[in-house]
Every structure is written in C-alpha cells, then in structure tokens.
Length: 249
Image (cartoon, rainbow, N blue to C red):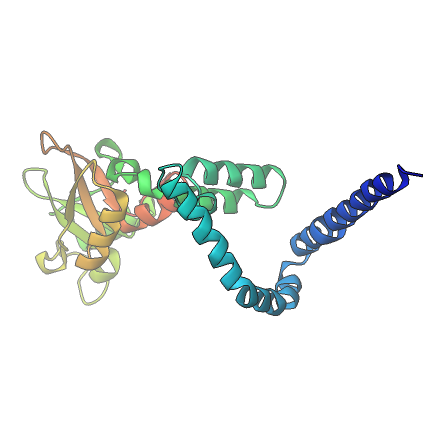
C-alpha cells in the first residue's frame, strides 16, 4: 500500500501530460492550420487578455533571466533570438511548403524571388548586349512599330550614328501625332539610366522609380563598357523568378 500513492502520482502526471499535449497543443494546432481565419477570430480575444494579465509576470521572469545571464554568466542576453530566420532558413521553409503542397510553383517562385532579391545585382536582371533588340535613330516610326510588334517589346533602346545608345523610345509616344514615314523624333527619345553591373537590384529599382526611367544600361564597373540592358519590368519580374524576356530586348 505504500507504493500506491507514488504510482497514482505517476499515473496522474502521465494522464495530465497526455491530455495537455493532445488537447492543449496538438488539437489547437491542427485546427489552426486547417481553419486559420476562424481560429484567429476565436482565440485572438482570450489570448490578448492572457497577454495583458501575465505581462508583469513575463517581464519579471525575462528581467531575472537576463540579469542572471549578464551578471553571472557574463554574457550579453539577446531577446527573441528564436523569432528571426536567416535567408537559408526561409528558403528551406518555402521549399518544404512547396513539396507538401501548401504552395504552388508560382507562389514558390514569387516568395523565393522576393527572398533572394536582397542578394541580387543589376547583372542578374539584364539582357546581354548581344541579345538586346534596339533600333537605329534613323528608323521611321513605322519601322519602330514593326520592330515592337515582331519583338513583343514596347520600349526599345535607340542607337546613334556611333552605335552607342542615346536613349529609348516607347512605341505609344510614336503613334500619337506622328507620321509613320518620319524618322524617330528626337523629342520622343527618353533618357536612359546607367548602373554598374554590381549595383544591388533594390537600389536599381529605387533609382528607376525616383528618376522615372524605365530602361537603363548595365556597365562593367571596371571598364565602363556596356554589358547589357535592363528595365524596371525586368527588375520586378526578377522577383518572381529568372527573367526570360525583357521589355527593352
């Protein structure tokens, strides 16, 4: 009979632990994953109350733990270290979600592109010079329109007499108030931007939007020679995945 109480205590602890794990953690988690919207609306208010009620206790526990780490262990405490993720961890989470069917291919490409956007540079979103579709400044409006139709691009770089880019044209500017047989009007040639090939894509996008420039040349940072052409559409498309075509050729 002396062992009944310890055995009963162990059994009671096992039952309580089992019920807590199943009904306190696993069932709510499964319900939240299956129906996140209703679960958030249902659990949000009580969780908010619990957070407010226990905030002083949580603060006291955090303060005590940080003081122990700082003064006894001689280490600098770091708050919420586990709530942040590295780029590799985010990429792995997206890949796992795709494999399990939570994300389709388009969603996976979009999220992955957004994650990697911080690490990409102008060279990653450019069309190499040899593949750029451009027009000479002597072309007529009709010829430019035909090139746009054949290439599928609405913005085309314009080459000068020395084959250097002097700007770019938007086909809609040429079709309004201009004769099809006249050469490209100089007033319709827009200024192109210019970026070093290693310029971060975020900076490229910000400067293009600020300067209202949709097409830019990408240059070798050492020699200054043009490596290719990029556009604002290319930069935005790069977020969703590798670019296979550009609005500037």
